[in-house]
Length: 133
Image 1 (spheres, rainbow, N blue to C red):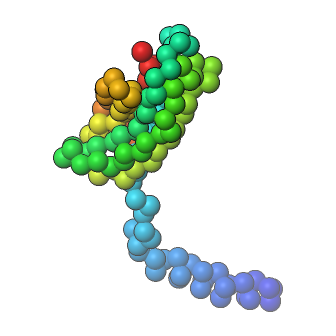
Image 2: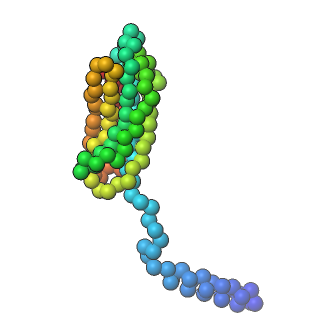
């Protein structure tokens, strides 16, 4: 009987402490979006020795750059095939807006281009797969 009496104050104190906590007082982790970039080619570029530089880009609705990350330069012939895709995953703050994300690339002495896609406001995970042509 004494054990029951000793447990009662501990239990009462625990219930009191839990009841005093206000909901929502603990900080919520910041909302984020995750974008997975996948790069490869299906074409045979084995004879193309030109240097190409890719960069990953993410911009918000105000056209402000959220991410601009250059990848190492490589020769066009070294862009991997489907079996060896380059995969990059980036997590960015979610301000509730639609984003534009994708690849920019420049081929030395030839020019620049891009492959872009939208990330809807309600999307938490977006996969952008680019089979370079």
